[in-house]
Length: 130
Image (tube, rainbow, N blue to C red):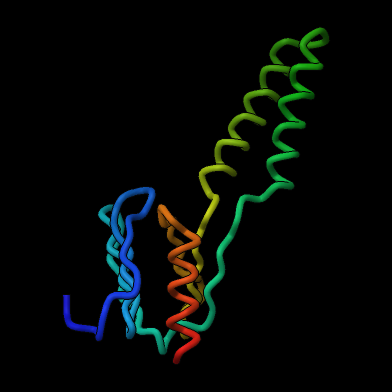
């Protein structure tokens, strides 16, 4: 790694890999995907996606509807319950997503830092200085 004037934040990603925020760039080192380096000057926006409570409530509602429907049709009730549980698991897994919009790119970079709030705060503090 080159000398970037100091590391502001360094942490792990939930799905493996590391994220490093320095005073001049962001480095995403993902073992199952291509590593990416983005200069801070190229970052347009940073957002932190918390858990989507609407989807959690809807998923739990699906499970409840499945349980309530057991008397009418066991296969259909099981289908609703499984769909609700799968939706809850996917929603929970996507919590704390850090989205980094980069100039010239159509899709933002998405990563899942272990401590997403600290990573977001570090990025905001560095971007606010520039």
